[in-house]
Length: 339
Ligand SMILES: Nc1ncnc2c1ncn2[C@@H]1O[C@H](COP(=O)(O)OP(=O)(O)OP(=O)(O)O)[C@@H](O)[C@H]1O
Image 1 (cartoon, rainbow, N blue to C red):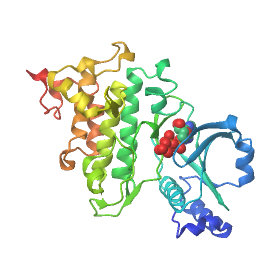
Image 2 (cartoon, protein in one colour):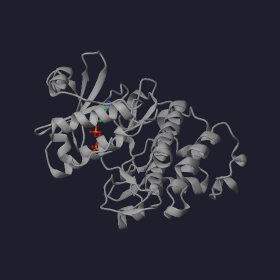
Image 3 (tube, rainbow, N blue to C red):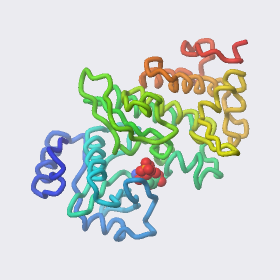
Image 4 (cartoon, rainbow, N blue to C red):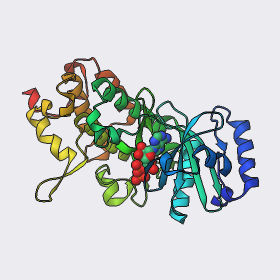
């Protein structure tokens, strides 16, 4: 799917040409252009009861199509150039990828001031809801689920970095952008800030987007964006999955502490038991926990060159499960545990 300009969204004729081209070339990537009528009917006229949540882009509504398929419809809040750009990037990027750990795009509608994006509905909400939100007390994320989510999100991101053509940098990896499917499988979502990286280009310099607490230092300071920025954010996410701590915490007195500052002394002293989410009540595999913490430490290295690639992270996460610590080559980080 290649959009020539944003006006394509406004022109019915162009939209149908795009769809025809898409249907011919991309049968494995099925998305469609919906009519407004269809989406109004599916969401009961965007009824308040259908509203699932709200983000920077707008509100998200649950719906059911005339074929009985459950969908989530994201509705643009205000029509600004910035919002229109996010809409275009999201549709453009998500329309060209397909992976078991990426949120599936079903299609979109664009007409007048209305911009709607239609996704697969994720019945188990976002990782954020389970770690810090309404579902946190239900403790539905046991240890095996957390590990499966970590590996799945890493695989989705690894696909964007290494297999998508051109490669894609997500730029907003965080707990609210990892949605959970029927079996709690991870689906990386929200591609509004994504960047397509031309062949042979290692990094770009851009205006900083993304979310405080997850931003790699070189990106936050100089706008230098590369795949390593996603790796950094993913490292923060890993620590969050293990500990259910927020990426940035406000201490009494108003001082802010980030999750890496919090975890580092525990790692140095070998206090791994203190890192696990207390809601797990001790039901976790300590060796796996150590492995994942060490992977997160590597991902959140201040120097982007020292961070692993997402391909390595996937391999390490998969390899670390069920292997003894001494056999894992990446555990070169000095810990109190090694004394
Ligand atoms: N496909 C989906 N299925 C189920 N729930 C979804 C889906 N897409 C989004 N949501 C939910 O809708 C809410 C808003 O999502 P949205 O992506 O707009 O914002 P966000 O990621 O929470 O915040 P921001 O836009 O600031 O990054 C979130 O609670 C999210 O869990």
